[in-house]
Picture 1 (cartoon, protein in one colour):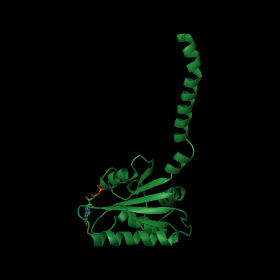
Picture 2 (cartoon, protein in one colour; picture 1 turned 90 degrees about the vertical axis):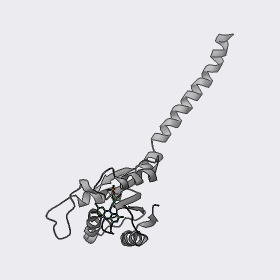
Picture 3 (spheres, protein in one colour; picture 1 turned 120 degrees about the vertical axis):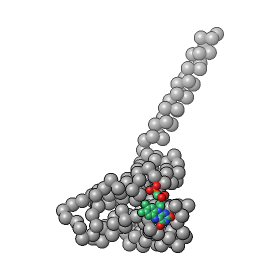
Picture 4 (tube, helix red, strand yellow; picture 1 turned 45 degrees about the horizontal axis):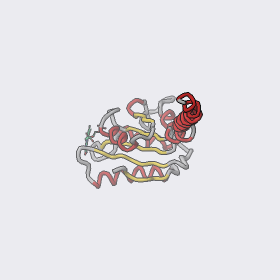
Amino acid sequence: MKKLAFVLALPVIVVIFLAIYFAGNSSTKGENVKMSNRNLFINASQNRNGNTAKLAKDYFGNQKYKQINLIDYDIKQLGQVKGTDDFEKVRSEIEEAENIVIGTPVYWSDMTGLLKTFIDRHELVDERYNDKNIKIIVQGSGPTDKEIKAISHIIEHFSERFGMEYRGVIK
Ligand SMILES: Cc1cc2nc3c(=O)[nH]c(=O)nc-3n(C[C@H](O)[C@H](O)[C@H](O)COP(=O)(O)O)c2cc1C
């Protein structure tokens, strides 16, 4: 009797096992991962795991994202570029992404120099970042609304110039 019950239950067990297997696979392959791999966080802080990075982590939650730290790249000031530096490397990360979050601490009431230099270096860029959207994180020890507004205005200006959809400040 026990043996018969087992034989009858076996196909059900196999079906459940296969369903779990394929469900697990579909959440780690294809669309989901492709979508989530296209979340890019550009950290403009000098700290790779500082307050800016923590806020981005909170924002993305359990979504996958790629973090790049501008501090790890050699991006020269306009007028100081000789040969190639890392500007195109960082730019290509934007081209591959879909959802972009730029995070900056407030330094002297403004965005960091790392971020400003990266934006300035777009002077000679003709390509557009169409179909990408952008949000920003601005944080500091006590940033004023005026400072946050001024910084977000620059990012909005940058977004418009390069055809991105500006989605505002992450609160
Ligand atoms: C050079 C410098 C200037 C700063 N100026 C400001 C400022 O004007 N307003 C402010 O709210 N915080 C200011 N801060 C504080 C940082 O924005 C704050 O510590 C921030 O959380 C650092 O982020 P991080 O941990 O990602 O580096 C300044 C920090 C530094 C290093």
